[in-house]
Amino acid sequence: MSPYGTLLVIAKAPVAGRVKTRLTPYFSPGQAAALAAAALADTLDAVLATPARRRVLVLDGEPGGWVPPGVEVVPQSAGGLDERLAAAFGGCAGPALLVGMDTPQLTPALLAPAAGADAWRDCDAWFGPALDGGFWALGLSAPDPELLRGVPMSTPETGRLQRARLTDAGLRVRDLPPLRDVDTPADAIEVAALAPGGRFAAEHARLTAARPVPAPEPSPYPSCTAGGR
Image (cartoon, rainbow, N blue to C red; front, side):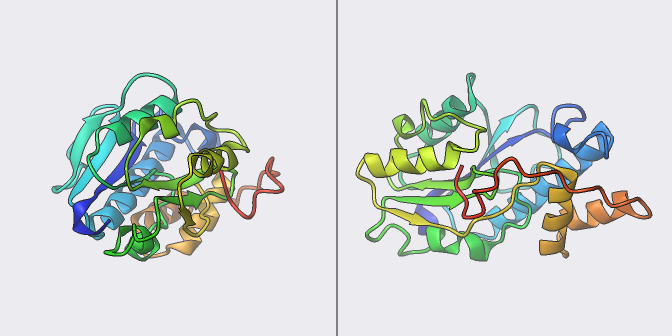
């Protein structure tokens, strides 16, 4: 993608009761929102440190002073998540790489293969699978909203179906490493440990000091350790 592409971050504004609701009741709605804000800040830090022509936050909600300089903000479209992702790509000219706000362990090094000068040599799409069966990154050399519309989102099969949509369209797909989304308190523990120097880890440590460790939830996705949503 080099400096000639667009980096997209799709996110919700960190408002209590609207974000990271699966972190409750272990965390209060306000604490869950604080963790979401920290995760989004870490994500935007990684995006700002990655070469790109544009960096765009595709936001559900109102922006605030937490949006750093150098990041454009555009509102999410109406409709399901597939429609909102499709619209985000539809606003791009040239190569675009989209990530979410649920992987604060994100680093420029993880994005580098899809954001370097040779990212699109013999490649039409980049796919970053998530361990819960989803995906944390999707890059398209020629953004086409129809590659996303109609893909069932937030299911154990989302990643597999989305990647199949790309290959069925004849695209040459390369994969990024699988990452864990922060959805549950147990996820938060693991992700904070993966990026101990980040804002998410610091906020998690502050909120969990002297509190019992939450029991891990049984995973509904036993076959998804190889990634893909």
